Amino acid sequence: MTRRAVSRSSRGLRDRRPTLAVFKFASCDGCQLSILDAEDQLLAVTEAIDIINFPEASSRILPGPYDIGLVEGSVTTSHDLERLLEVREQCGLLVTIGACAMSGGIQALRNARDVDELAAMVYPNPEYFDVLEESTPASRHVRVDVEIPGCPVNRRGLVDVLGALLAGRRPALPTHSVCIECKIRGTTCVMVAKGQPCLGPVTRAGCGALCPSYARGCYGCFGPADVVNVASLSAQFDTEGKATIKAGLQSFNVGAPAFEEAARHV
Amino acid sequence: MDLTYVVAMGSERSLVVRPPKLNSLVELLTSHGYSVVGPILRDGVVVLDFIEKFDEALIGVESAPRPGEYRLEEHKGAVFGGPVGPMSMKRWINPPNRIAWSARPEGDQVHVDTPKPRGPRAYLGIRPCDVAARTIFGEVWPGHPDDLVIVAECTSVGETCFCSSMGTGPAAGEGADIVLTEFGEGSVLVRSRSDRGAVLLARMNGAAATEDEIESARSRVAAAAESMVRSIDSEAAREALASMPDSAVWDSVAQRCLACANCTMVCPTCFCTSINDTADLDGVVQRTIRWDSCFTPGFSEIHGGVHRDSVAARYRHWASHKLSTWWDQFGTAGCVGCGRCITWCPVGIDITEEANRIIKEVAHA
Ligand code: SF4
Ligand code: SF4
Ligand code: SF4
Image (cartoon, rainbow over all chains, first blue to last red; front, top):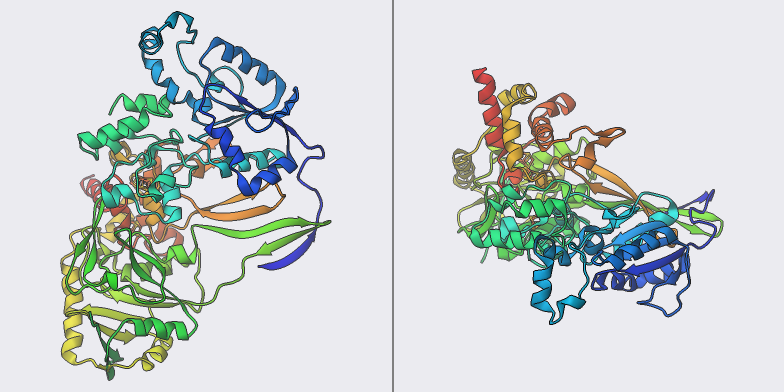
């Protein structure tokens, strides 16, 4: 690398170290773990941002308001809903992390079923069970500033969003297909070269084409891309392949309208 | 397996290499300061990568591309892996995600780093369509002036190939320094096409190519051209495609098209990129240049919205650009007939079929 010095006009970073809080709703904690998993960037994160409410990581919990709030998980109870409204009040910027907070998560599978019936199947005393009809994303109830997709989120994507918020630039969250990442990475297409079902062409990028790089088809954990043509995709497969495509559509992002709609036609 | 080099210089001087190994060519290139990019077998697919020796796993197998499908098949006598795999020289000339510059704070200064210029490369075993594509791509992203191209003529073709009709293969055209032609059982005829190529050839040991051998190689290439099943009337396509913006063909493609962008990623002439700036938490700023595609809505997003706001409009833009408006822009077609977009389209959308439908529509109008 050659080196050139130019004068430094502005620092880009804010004067005051912004505060951040992490809130958990109905979720598995995997996205929160992605923050801790940010390894080489974790130190930089804690230097740039004052994490003052993150029960998963520290017992030091300070009250709001917070500059940035990260929301993990979906809204499944009326208590969740009340809490989300409070969280929104307390946070300058509200960022959702992961498929649950963005589209309702795997728990949104119940949206198409009768909740009371399901509760009776699972719990011996369903009368103690208080839950909303549907598992819903945060954006259904409050204004969300940024949604980071994925199950779990990609930690580079997460750090990039934090960096973008600090620098005052737009986060670089792609909305195109996983296929573009696949080709950029130089991964062999499992659909064309091996005939495996792959949801990559209808799934939003951001994972870096993780599954195809391990020689397996994408199963849609980042949710719908900006164009979703499942009818054409699934027409390439036999009954078994179609079932795999459908199962992918009806998993972590079953609550995403584009996947929900597409699954009906497979 | 032993490979035979039959070395022909011009039409008068020729040599035969014994004991014959393609590795000696790679070594020769390396000793002349080139880093060598050539075909290798990876995950059951012929791809390009940096090589230090010739990948013998390629001998006797070749790519069998079909619409939406790629398999590897056995093929006696194949040396360079048959018709093109997914990668072309574009990947090395303009890498898919490269850093333009990065900057980081240091005291009250900002240091800007730019990548070091690279040294010369030799591209070995490149198919004729891709050599033509390099020239076309070079209008936008020129390669290194000292890069060397060693083309391998095609003696068998894939189901998705249509280079013959685009005038780029299967015989080597312009743009190569050395021409290799597979013939017989693993024998390779070697000819130079440039002064640099001739200098290298003079350093290769080999036996003279006989007239018969040269003729045998030529007739194999001619037979390959004959066996090609796909074609586009390039002249007619140039006229027709841009003149049919409202054709129902575009809507029918859009029914099947996933807008996944695989076609543009694998196309050896598609040159579009986007520029992304990122800043990490340490204040290090990076500008990257990344392959992008006219199939994404974001690509045509300007103030006020996305101006190619349907998949039909995006496919129409792409196919018309490749076969028609490219002529107005650069004076050539933007398609070399490599067939990659047909092979690597997950649903096998075929540019020859769609273009021919439009041509027919115009003819009957
Ligand atoms: S493996 Fe899947 S994601 Fe990758 S290019 Fe093929 S279809 Fe697209
Ligand atoms: S348009 Fe298709 S056939 Fe033509 S050069 Fe590009 S990938 Fe090859
Ligand atoms: S033509 Fe094929 S490869 Fe290209 S965007 Fe459409 S579906 Fe994808």
